[in-house]
Amino acid sequence: MNDKLHLAPIQNPRRAIDIGTGTGTWAISDFAEAYPNTATIGTDLSPIQPNTRPPNLSFEIDDCCSDWVYPKDHFDYIHIRLLYGSVADWPKFYKDCYDHLAPGGYIEQVEVSPVPKSDDGSIVPGDLLDQCGVLSARAGEAFGKSLMVQAFMQDEMAKAGFTNIVKTTYKWPIGAWSNDSRLKELGKWNMLCWQQGLEGWTLRFFTKHMGVGDPPDHIRSQSTGLYQSIQTQLTSTVDA
Image (tube, rainbow, N blue to C red):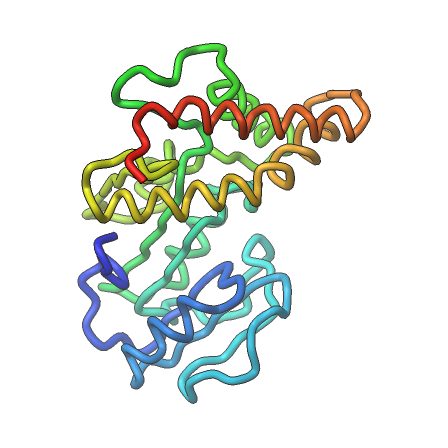
């Protein structure tokens, strides 16, 4: 997002919530410190946030898919990032967001597509990288919690009652192939993310929800083959 903390044009909101805060990094080092007068809450199912935090920030264990415990019209800013694969009923979720957002407030959501795409045709239908994306999308549907929220979140927000919706799309490269220095740096980090996370992304989805009955060691070998395919597809354009 070009070093921007958020894109919503908020100005000194009274109350804000970061739904699915994870480790709390965005809520702590970014938002709460940038807005010291904003009462900020970070919620998650897992209590993995640090105890040291700004005085205007609190963390709560909460399931955003359950009934919300906050008053209606309570928040001036609702922040969501990478909740794909976490919500079964998105219409209900957006309705809860709408009901608990104060008039004039903003909701902002950042999501990614699990289906890799290429500008130059280097990803072709049927190759391992393409299969990974397609199978991941199907696995999310089989799991009952779509990974493709970025494709429908704008429409679902509108159905919930939100207006003046702005959609901004960014490229997130895999690998250091870009000639743009910023995209090159992002690509290096994203490649590391793929390298370290690929087995975790695929093993449970493919075995439990896609009916792949092969032994885990075989699935792991397929994950290794997929990562090697990624490396091969990128090698010809990587400018390290």
